[in-house]
Image 1: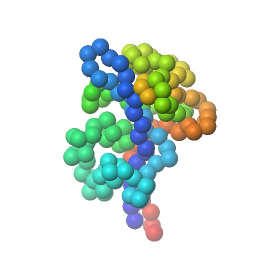
Image 2: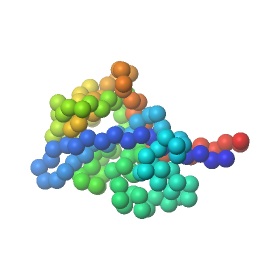
Image 3: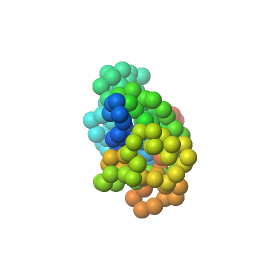
Length: 147
């Protein structure tokens, strides 16, 4: 028996001079069953069973890259420009983060600062605060069992 698990996905908008930028993060707890998934997640779970990701990844590249590869991404529109593996937790806020400019966000992530970034804010923490989610650096998992 094979099961497929994908991380949950959160996203914030960043400010850039020449385009729209986005910060995306894959987080745990993962989505394992179709019953607790939304339409995009369900399409990816069903496509993964047949190794068919093309349609969804063309339509939703920010979602697709983030949940397949895990970690933290910065996108220029729908093209990934950098991926980070970051330890710790994130909390999505309803208000704007302290840092929203794309270059400052890259610097804050590389320096592992505990900051709130983007709009709506995604706050990075090294410890598990209330309502925080654990960053998933693995992405999609194929779980094989003997049952």
